[in-house]
Length: 203
Image 1: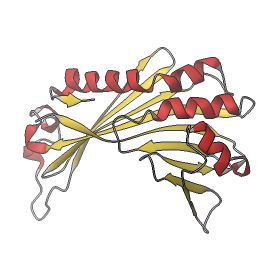
Image 2 (image 1 turned 180 degrees about the vertical axis):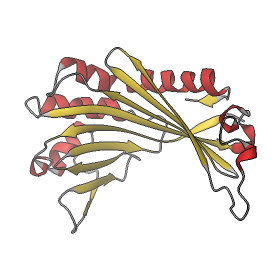
Image 3 (image 1 turned 120 degrees about the vertical axis):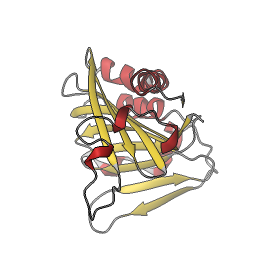
């Protein structure tokens, strides 16, 4: 069976004024109607808020050091939403923009490759039970870094792709374009897992 998308998000790391993220303006960035309710969660242990919407699975997390747009629905394009935030705040100091994709499947569907090497089956230690093992590879294409990780547990396995753009220290057209490329980068990440691990991935 193919590995399927469980969760994705787009993130901008920088310095943000959380007070400008008023629900009414966030609703306009999301193209919501004035009647669509917005739920707000606050964290009393640190500054920031989360916003949820009744009409979509998209969730916003806004903190002084980052803005995260996340969803568990495949059809939600978190990157396009984040690109609108970057266009709205053009003078915001930005240190990185990234996308994260997590695909879930059955460990038994993975080939033997991630289990090979110094921590293969022969690495069992008496008195201990293996809880999970992880394999990681970083690939670079121009200003984009693909961090690919395979996490294997007894039953479930997770393919995680962390795709980062680090070109510059402020909002730029390149950063906005990277955010907009969410869907293409998700497909590229899935294709890399297919080539490297030999599994089917439904992006």
